[in-house]
Length: 155
Image (cartoon, rainbow, N blue to C red; front, side, top):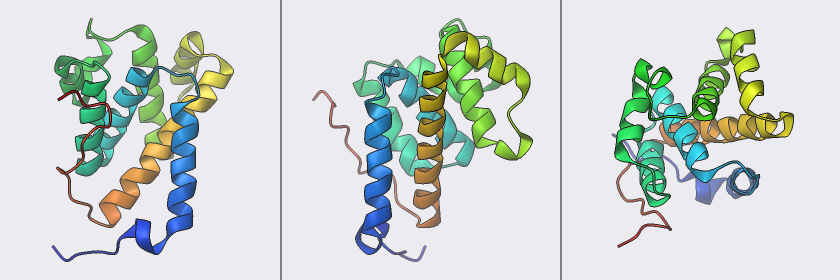
């Protein structure tokens, strides 16, 4: 694989903007563990190895179990007893927003509104937009997974 440009070095302003969006999402009030589950699921959909590496590590550092992280790539996350209804609604929303060409079905919106306020749903949407953006940068520029260490990692 041929080395590709370092986006952080060559296009610093968009990276700063994406970092600012990430900081907003991190401080918006949505649960950190829920946000990490969403980031993992969206990264699975997009096939983004570097972000899967990053967010599974961050998720574990937040106290997430491997069992819950592993099941996200299977259809059965919809029925598992290991997720709350709020988490299921967030994951369904994240999938619908990621597969946006299919639109967001009314039942998915209704389910999300049962578990999220309007503000929370807007913030969740921005979280999905942010991880989709980072996935596209990482995949397009062939970032290599493995070196990331969570800031919260307990050693």
